[in-house]
Image 1: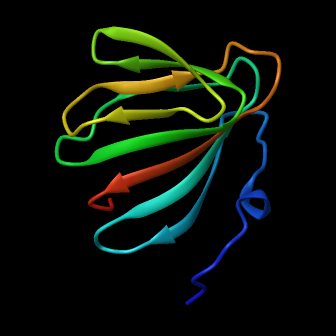
Image 2: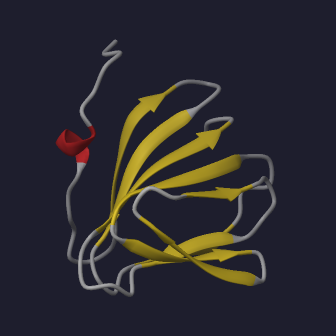
Length: 106
């Protein structure tokens, strides 16, 4: 099992929908990277029994968090506790790169 990875080795793009890749996965935690090109969306959804965070590595995202919409930029962390509807949209002009953690893992 690889215990050290470089985030940039897992960054990518897909024209039809946002790109995602898993860095680490155990029964307790999933850590991955999501990349959204300008205009791409991760539609609002929820995880009834899983907490989730997004760390904005690069770019700017508009996040749904329950009834609220918030903007987060490079260096900020967004928290979506279990049961909260959440999602993100890239309304910017550059790629939005997010380090994502979900616990317990799906």
